[in-house]
Amino acid sequence: MPILNNSVVLSEEAQDLIQVKIHTEGFSHENWGDDDLLPVRREIREFYRNAQRLVCVYCLGPVSNRSAAGAPIEHIVPKSQHLGFMFEPKNLCVICPDCNEYKSKRETLADPVLVASRVNYPNNSSFFRIVHPHFDDYEDHIVKCERLYVECSDKGGYTIYACNLNRFFRRFGRCEELVNDVALVQQSERFYDEGVVDLQS
Image 1 (cartoon, one colour):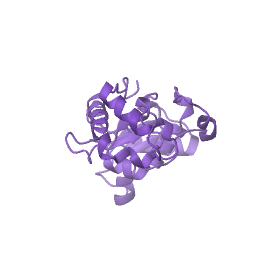
Image 2 (image 1 turned 45 degrees about the vertical axis):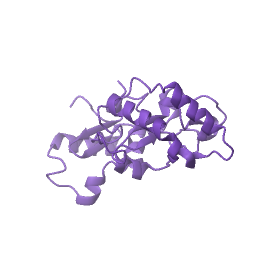
Image 3 (image 1 turned 120 degrees about the horizontal axis):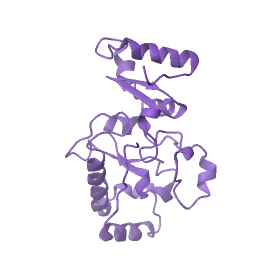
Image 4 (image 1 turned 30 degrees about the horizontal axis):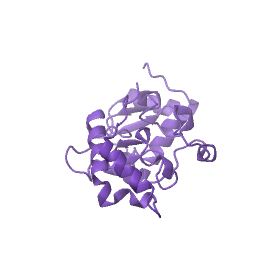
């Protein structure tokens, strides 16, 4: 089951603010942080904090309960490259600050040129190269044990890369604090050797 089964439904006030904003001359992705959109961002952040139970959709680590900086709103498809999806509910969630910094504006669409001609947001998993919290089952793509992330699919691999999910490993190397699960390490090595993951073991 995807991490997110519901998308934010914005209040009429928020929708009115958005309509005014997007019809303002010179509107761009840089307007996302404008003061007049603060109530919109607040609604979005609070909805996804609750829907995600304060868990980052990429690393499964915590997002903050109170601090806005500790729970940045994520545009799964980057708003700088796909402005039309900036306020699309299925393009939004909250993530931890580290995943936000690492992922930044990396392209997440499998075929950006194809999607560029669309008015509506893609509505299924096949359009995305990243594990999409509204469409994908996380466990089908990534196995997490302690602080180690193992890819089970190309999407899982791209997500691990884009968000640098193995950042602890990159900083501290292989150590007891990272993982004590020999079976997981063997599973990881088998995946890299054979491209197969046995989720039952």
